[in-house]
Image (cartoon, helix red, strand yellow):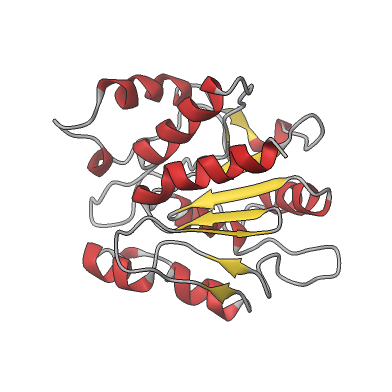
Length: 214
């Protein structure tokens, strides 16, 4: 699982990892007996978006934050020995994942080896810089899903971001399949699995688990 280290959008607006997207996936993988390595561009603590926790956040989601306290540095991760890579979201991913060369290398290696590449909400920001060995964008021609421009409009945070995720993915030649705002939606195109928003985390995770079980 690859998470962001990025904490600031601008003008004092904090960001980071959307905790439920990390936690729901982590717990499901763990319950199914998988060993999980959590990595980030810089390693160390993975920051939690303050907007993703509140009075209504279940305790088990809060407890999962302990797995973000000491993430592994991406440069120290090899594709060998892993069956899949999963990118949870949070607006922080929009800043430090798109241009991370080690992540781009890992995504190419995972994808071309037939291993699972999965991302949810803003996690697909990590896919936008990834190319295959033939130089084509990894997402080109694939059915892909991510946080939509319409959803971003409703967050009123779009102006703080380096780009709009849906628009960028479309520009790369993907077949972007959008569902209504905040509805659970997942796209599976071969070993590429993507989901639209926080509500889609478990659907993406279950699709990953299903594919791992094949």
